Image 1 (cartoon, one colour):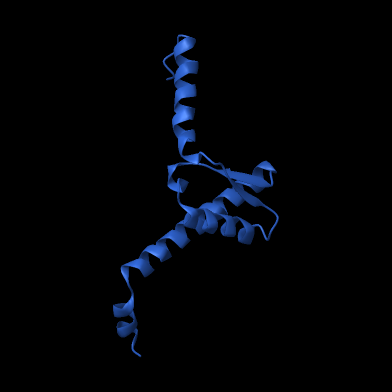
Image 2 (spheres, rainbow, N blue to C red; image 1 turned 180 degrees about the vertical axis):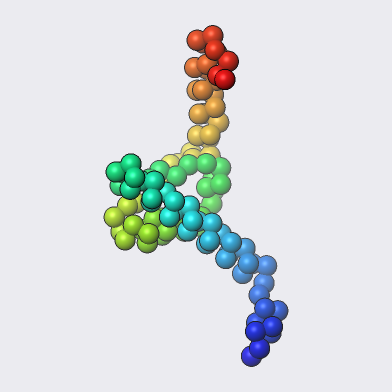
Length: 103
């Protein structure tokens, strides 16, 4: 089979899967390097990207396990999609109460 023939057989789903695996592997690798630098062995992943996204959670958990050779674990919180909004609210409240604009 010629290479051009194989390219024509690739589906949009195949490409989407390849992109997702690539992104989660990169995130896992960067998270591991950051954790090693900070001398921690568990990484908590949060954010709307993971909200009701078990495929990405599984891939991130695999990436963390793979890149750390089983020494680090990925953790996921039940309400992970709200932590960005909560962080913004806490920052807003802390800067608005002390009279600063946060700049």
